[in-house]
Image 1 (cartoon, rainbow, N blue to C red):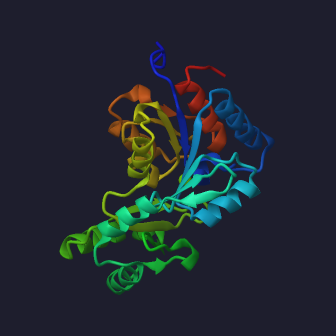
Image 2 (spheres, rainbow, N blue to C red; image 1 turned 180 degrees about the vertical axis):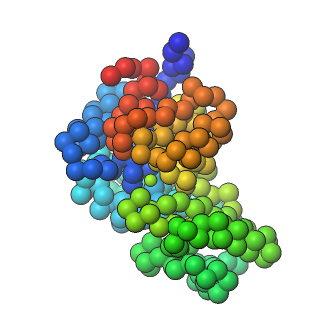
Length: 271
Ligand SMILES: [Mg+2]
């Protein structure tokens, strides 16, 4: 049975860290990145990066790992969007930015930082380079995950904040990562904004990811790839949340090798 006979894939949307960026320094990982670049060209796909990184750190990764240049970069966990211009440079999407600022009401990055640091003892604000007017980010020890989740959720309800949060795990340090964003903003909503503006059917988008802040995108009506280095719990949760199991490819391959295998699955091609 082949699910792909009636559907064209138009877009590869991918997370970077733990997903498209090589997880290990091996020739196989590098080759998988190159192969993905070729598949994108061969099938005339739009390529978009959907990442927790800032725009500057995304560019560092593109250079460092020789990644293909995407049509758009949805960075800061979907709260900032940049599009490639004809000359190869990128410009921010100001309409998107304003729409999200309006949604935050009176809250700012600074007021969120001070309110939460006072209330939740485990939280440390991340480096200023990881902060934006639309994303407030903290680190915390992973053992405090339940306490952090509960405290932040209660704070949002208590103050009726037009905000939401995602929690994930730093693949390198194992620490917890907390991102506070305007309500209803995540990688999934950013992909849908991007697609709507281009009249692209979300069902024609393949999205690949590896961690908790990718779940919203994976389960938002796109085709999904979860790479092999995602933890077992996330694999189970994502599987349960998918409306159609055939729209999810649980890859064995690590990082870019998993993305490549998943894209080929959704394109209806075999190794
Ligand atoms: Mg990731």
